[in-house]
Length: 286
Image (cartoon, rainbow, N blue to C red; front, side):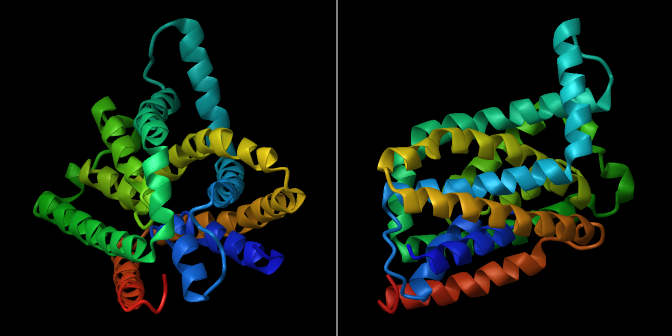
């Protein structure tokens, strides 16, 4: 990659990672649309992308720093005590733990097969269309389940059952497929468990942080194995730029979900995915 390409991808990733539009999908499709000569199936490309994700994780920690301080303190206290209390921060912390396990396990076993999808714009565009219908279906099912029940049917985040945390974790694992949004899939799963849009987004963003760090621990060291100084420098600068744009994104989305839902993002994914799929099938992009 050139430096300009690396910086554009950093801004793109930082902006789109937390929006439910699949940053991985955009990282594959945008270079294809611009006819960049970038080998997306090269292992160093995925490592570069993960380095950008690390910047996003740092932005999330910065934005939710007060939450993380309370959660970590509560987790440590529960471990020292040897039992669980009714502290909502403690329960949220353990919900994050159980939600992280599914995607961590699936990520280890599916890493190699998933890499192959990065080389196909048609597959990625198809997954982006699927992502749109996941959000449409999630919103429709939620409205149907809450019809006639009102706010009484909505539960606060600390009341999410343990099985619910696992289900959201499995939903998040769908984002291993480029084109399926991590935040979109996990927010839909949380909405179907009767969380509000605001709490569903908060749980999704908190849950993304340990998952991204786990992926970084596996992938970023591979950049050092390449011996490429440019790749390391691009990853470092790109990570900082992704962190800045991700911080702005999460600030916007936390306000958005006070009064809005996922459907506008679904329409965007449907339109953009259909255009890209058409171009891929007609060999305009590869």
